[in-house]
Amino acid sequence: MKARLPSYAVLTLLVLFLVGPFFVIVAASFSAGSTLAFPPQGFSFKWVEKVFTVESFQASFALSMFLAIVATFAALVLGVPVSYALSRYRLPLAETVRTIVSSPIIVPGIVVGLALLRYLVVPFGMDITLSLFLAHTALVLPYAVRVVSASLENLRSDIEEAAVLLGSSRIGAFFRVVLPNIRGGILAAFILGFVTSFNQVPVSLFLTGPGVRTLPIDMLGYMERTYDPSVAALSALLAFMSIGIVFIAERFIGFSRYV
Image (tube, rainbow, N blue to C red; front, side, top):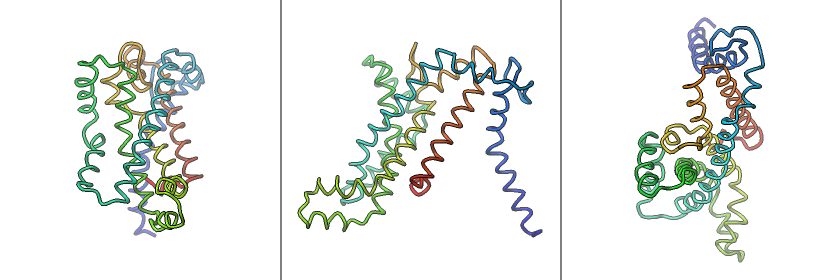
């Protein structure tokens, strides 16, 4: 037992290091004071209630939710065929293709955001929402390809070949056999992409403009103007939302098997 004490101590310190800031933010969000501080000054729900009355938060939340859903869906529409081709066929330069597809998460987000601003928005005057959609789709695509590819690797190819031998077309076998068997991986990729897109900061920071801001960027701007606990309250709500999504996904599809 004594030999395990150092391990337990290190584990306890690690857990405190990881979850400590989260508890600080949650505690600060229920403060009765007028400034963001810890320990909290009393207890009140007024800052949680205020979050739902700030119009900019409502608009930016709607935009972030729209981008997260639509961009992740678009990434899956592109990523599933790419994953299938990489998993089922011996393509030339397959590893190069994987590297290119993964580049949005390998290259720093600030570099990606600046590049998209310089080569999409500035010369062509592209609509801000459209540029955000394209950027978020590119950022989510690597997760879609990797998660769906892992799911396809675990699916025996002879099942699909059996469907073809029994008279199904290759496309028919894909929709009737492959897709139903990798739906867990597709759903896991969607959840991972949704959370990634919703919480995206570096790229969105370069591409947002007047009146068009994602929620994380709006929160940064709000903190520059007002330093009250409402930002902590909103942060706590978003953290609980993300934790709830991942918990439900783990409960029903075994999220940890795919990521």
